[in-house]
Structures are given as C-alpha cells and as structure tokens.
Length: 98
Image 1 (cartoon, helix red, strand yellow):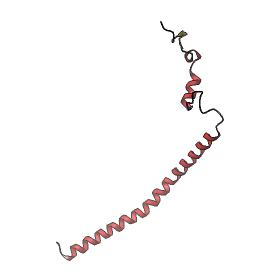
Image 2 (cartoon, one colour):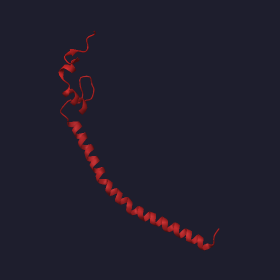
Image 3 (cartoon, one colour):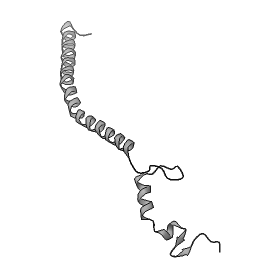
Image 4 (cartoon, helix red, strand yellow):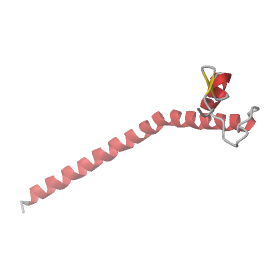
C-alpha cells in the first residue's frame, strides 16, 4: 500500500471523476429527452390518426371469406384482368383437365 498521499489522490480523482460523470449526465439526459420528445409526440399523433381512420372507415375491411383487406389485396384485386380471375390464362382455361 502506498503512502497516505497516494490514497488521498486516488479518492480525489475518483470523486472528481464521479462528479464529472454526474455533471455530464445531468446535462445530457435533458438534451436527449427533449430531442426525442418531438418524435414520440409525432408517433402518438400518427397512432391516434390511424386509430381514428380505422374506426371511421366507410369501405369494407373484410371480404366474403372473412379475410382482412389490406392495401396490397385491394390493389391486386383491382389490377387482375378478368380472364385471370376466372382461371383463364391467355384466353385458355387453366382449370380443365387435359
């Protein structure tokens, strides 16, 4: 073990290091909090808007089989040619057994 001055110097540096850490933390946490707060606020607003839209939607959300419509299924149902939706490909029946 060193002399008494080494022990004093050790505890002074530990104390100053801890004080510096707490000081930086005290300034950094509010800054990070206020930087993140607008994004949290926007996320809550977006969630509320989507919930409101889901509750007040006029069009059907489910098809005749009970499957939930998504944007992809709505687009795919709108863009499929009638011949393909009836089981025909290039004007030929694909469901007949040959």
